[in-house]
Image (cartoon, rainbow, N blue to C red):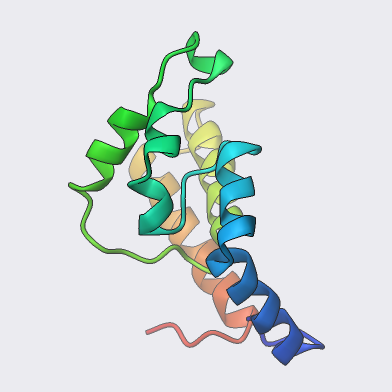
Amino acid sequence: MMKATQHLPEAAELAIWLTTNPEATKLYTTKQFLFPCTTALLTSAEFAGQKMDFYGGQAVNKVFAKSAAAVSNFEWSPFQDFLYQSMEDEFGASIGGKGTLSDAFDRIQDAVVTYAREQGFTVD
């Protein structure tokens, strides 16, 4: 949770429920087509067999589930949206002539470190 959260216990409880409740996680996967956040759902026949119009009616989740087995553990940043927006802005600027790609990475790092500190995170 972010430092500025006014209702920390409630926010934490909601986050836990959203990512562990079987009904909630199933809705994310079957209705919003988000990647499963539980192993049980990822390995379920229902997930593997789900066909999506977006992919021409193919059951692509079989490929996604198989690929997931090859991914080592990692954690997303608590401000991933900010990171993605910074990447979009700076890569676009680089393509538009504002420095090199290496310069864009430097600007992204500077922006994300500043943002993280503003949110109360310690950055070494």
